[in-house]
Picture (tube, rainbow, N blue to C red):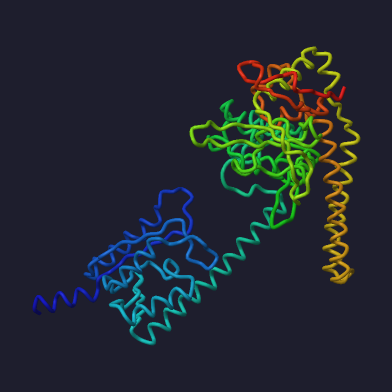
Length: 490
């Protein structure tokens, strides 16, 4: 045989080895390496040159997977370039559990040098013959059938575990040991603290900043993020509930929070007065929004900062709002004040009021636990009634029209109960005072949400009087404190 014919013969068997493992919890890829070793030995025995080794780890080939198979895609690119004649695998399910993907390769075999899919147990799917294509399709259909059966088995097992309240698996949950059952008290105390602080009116952002400043880390040892903490504290795991496909089951692990605490957090989270913070967008920057008024026309003043431009520094200001969102005139629009000295003046006035511990205790709102419990129970009752409507519709007790009408009424009723609970919580616990600090000590270290809650507790209005504030100096500012009037609730 000539050298040219030998070369042509070898080109017919230029081989790509493909290996895949659908799940590798250890991260060692041992099973993938075993597949590669087995395929390499087979290629050596056959005398086929291996032109590429492709492997995808922890990725399913079934229709239920959404992860891309990067090495698989690179292999197909090599096929299109005419570099591969044989795809060598240990078994068909390693390559395909989707018929549409196999059909793509069959089409490629018509226009490229790809000729066969070969398994290490000697099964050859010749893509140049009808028989070989038929056998490959049957193999993939069988793999799809098995994948469907496996998915059902996994779902049945997961449902049974959920109904028994068993641990779902995954990483260590914050507040519990690695078994997911034993409470880690140091972290459980943090969960309880965060829940109470959120119920008491603090923003998630402020709590996150505080946790990170205290070097309190997540279960993974990382800093807290806003979306991470808000998702964590609202998990029903912490009230001893195992969730599965929208259903709740009593969990085998002990609870860290009470159902009442969770309901109070949920009521605040869903309240119209509160929205989960997302990044920096919409984060409140001004202390006195909703409390500060124009002394010239009596209109509301709003935060209206000036951006840095043309060499002028950025500046936070309050201004009288002239029109509302509908274009209606609601103020004169002529009053402005730099925010920093106004807020500093208000801070010092508030701290002076609270300097006497007896005054602080007197002003601190009292929580009527019976009233809170009653509001929570009413909220739960209305939610249960809304859930019952779904059952009534499913069992034909209600027609579709009746269900839609009743659902709208019930949802409004739930929202009303939620708002009532959230409003009472804001009134009674918004100004939760630090146990070991005075207001003056806590002010600078606390977030803006907490400071606002303190201001709202004692201040009725802050009135900006007309005049020329720049004619006087106060604390390094061109500012006249005599042009600011604080009206107290006391």
